Image 1 (spheres, rainbow, N blue to C red):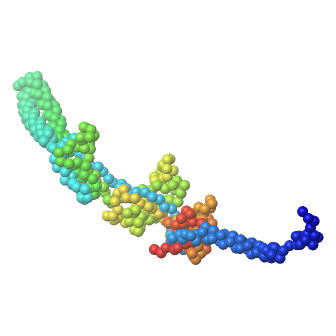
Image 2 (cartoon, one colour):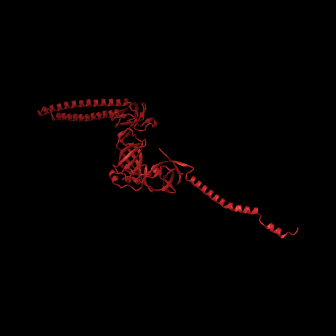
Image 3 (cartoon, rainbow, N blue to C red):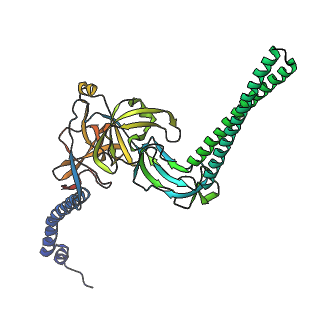
Length: 415
């Protein structure tokens, strides 16, 4: 290999023009690529936030408006409890003796009056016993008449003997015999009178047994159950196992209906006798029934930690039936409620309050977005709850879904 010229070596080391152009262009493109990468990150982040905030899904919800409570609260209710309609006078009517039914004169839904015949039992045997007792009474009465006649005769004989002895025509022994005869007859008459009384008592007993074959209504009311049919055996005892009925039918005095509710023992101090109340039946949720507290049963249920309270119904109505479910609102004294200052906070539906991160939260509606607002709940007023933390007039989500988050997109549903 020959020795290269110095000028050739310099030419080999010189950077060509095309190489200089490539390096210059690459230097200019790098800033633009970095800016594009940052912009892409911003767009992806915004899209992620939009998705998390609910842009990808709009929650269809109902809105409610927070309102300021009036003096005395939203209403005068201080406590609510649930229970059932019960009847203070209800009876399953049965015969007082064992017998076979020959007539059943009732049907469900019929009204009966006190003393009305509900059913009759076979009474042949009882009628025979009564006839026998009546015959015995007549025989005893006839025997008494015989003894009374004998006594009358003995008394006449005694008077004659007294006259004869007074004239010394007979001995005193004959007088003593006559006196003894009168005393004996007197005792016999007295004993027979007791026998007559026994016979008459037997008649009454037989009559009672006969009366037992007729089943009568003990009070006026409505027949709610017919428990036996003609031909079945009824008994006041469960004799004969499942083949013997223990009742003919059930009567309920509809005027004695009341409501029994269980009140949590932690709130029983809010309830007093004669306190005003308002009842609502599950069957008629829009019907408000005026009521009052009759009594607080002086015992607690250890298992449920409740105290039973009797509620009187002030407005009787045929729609109120035994065993219906009911909800009772105990009312505060109207004068006390009117003079009381308005409580702090606003009223929102109780369903609007949910737990988020362990805090009581409502979702305020900001145009079409949900804004989580922590609140402090207070007293309940029927379906409303007093809360602090938002202003009156704030629109809130009535029933926030569990997956709703702060900033979620909303679609307000109208009723």
